[in-house]
Image (cartoon, rainbow, N blue to C red; front, side):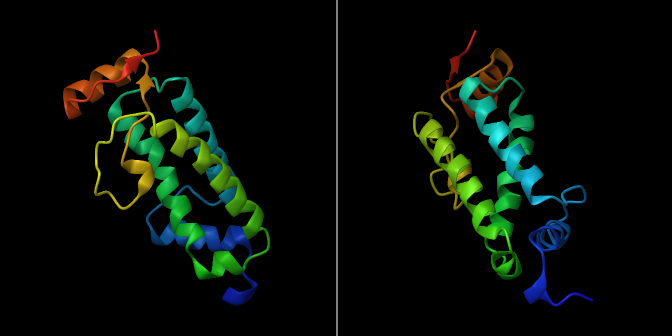
Length: 138
């Protein structure tokens, strides 16, 4: 058995993901890339419905667990991983800063607001579910 002090970033991430019920997430870099891709998609105008948006944004919840895990924080590569997440975070903060606040008391900042624009399906679904208007990219 590996001592937690010697844990690799990947093993710490896998442990954190498994404890949180994420059965398919075993690679911190793939999850970081998923976060970056999601943010880029939102900047261009998220195309799918609100349920898919909630599913896709949940990767940031997982990244948060890893960023706050003591074993992960001690692992080699954590600084680079953390910096990559934070770079994407900055882009998303700027993006949602232009959008409507939907949950002002939400402790996870990435879930408080929506991006200001989206594809027709996303805009329509957000309007119906949340009574919030976004700009359509079409």
